[in-house]
Image (tube, rainbow, N blue to C red; front, side, top):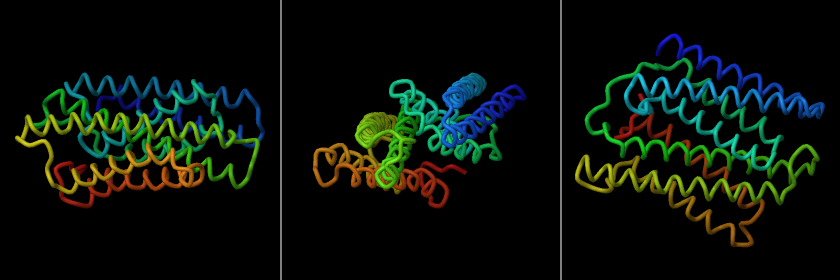
Length: 266
């Protein structure tokens, strides 16, 4: 990674770190200036993050999301984008602390990893791969947002505090995050199947990564229907959001790092 890209990356990390601290202060003393400052820092961090992503994309000649550093980097960028969408649309200031803390963990885990840009193997050198991987992590980001909203729902249900949005809003936003994430992940599966057919001659392979990705898709397809089932509404749906994200993390990191698959991260 170039020196300028490193400056952009660390600048984004610092902005996210400062935003988490301001969100924490806002939770303690409830000053509007604090959440405005925190939100401005998230926006600035996202801008620096986007510039770094664009620079790496330009230097590599492809969307660099191929190893552990670059996938964590892109996952963090996507989660920041999703949070900005929800914050700008719904003004859910209280969610900022939890979501940006998760985002900080993703980017912080990426920082010590190998950030070198390497040539793509021929099978990956196609726009279908770019679409597949981009929709995958954008879907993951919405699932991460749903996880955060699910945790906040359970906390609010127990504490009934004015610091958090009301239960009805948290439930509605959770359902929206699940639906948008499922839509994007469905596109990931679609383009992944087309890419596999072009590259290897089959739409679906029975390898462990493909199977677990299909299980993730089935789980969230079920969640899109579960919101209409009374016993799964509210607390049950929040619990499923948390369980679903655990499934996502296992599919992404557990299989990518611990098992042999055609989606290695090391």
